[in-house]
Image (cartoon, rainbow, N blue to C red; front, side, top):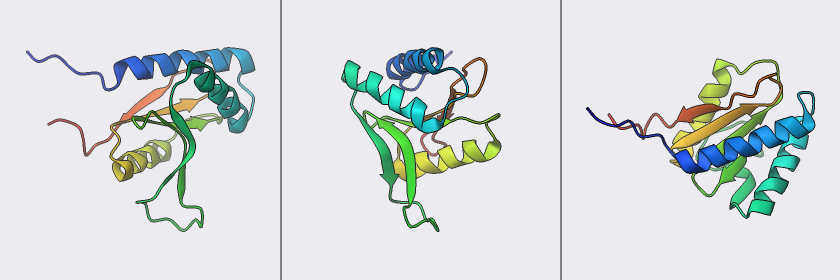
Length: 130
């Protein structure tokens, strides 16, 4: 029997703790930018390497600005912050596109509007071991 591997377990666990800090501090009804600003301050204080509003270059887009993810953490995890009533299938598909274009293994979708915070883990379908 093989052990299942949790992708980026330590870093994603640490990030989840920061999501909860932000959610507890700001509540459920702020804007995505406010959550991102508070989260960025925690990243900076803990000296966790990140890039905010990271441009993904390999995706075709009609947008003149291209595709931008909220955070790229330590070149290992993509974060997408939401502040809406529900996470949709389109949100998952968007994250999978980001992961595929960047060859990153894990993305986290965080919807701060939920009463109970439940970050969603999305794996890059191209990099999943078969």
